[in-house]
Image (cartoon, rainbow, N blue to C red; front, side, top):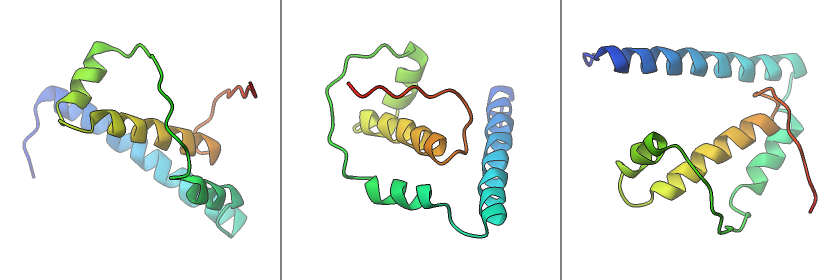
Length: 103
């Protein structure tokens, strides 16, 4: 096991708790429905079909620094994180208000 510093332990604990909750939510939804939810199939089939859109966005400097440390392709990784959140929200795993505008 890797020895972690205080900040690493705090982030690890937060992330670990979050992942355990997501895992519980995933299993619980499948157990309650006794099947894979239809929305999950739609999400899986839709991935990779979306076109890219150029966008100007303001992101916290520490978030940008974090992703840039991974080198080339950091914007794609940021997109993957946003896509994971979106899919979690669409699958009903992440609660919250979601506005849809068809403009």
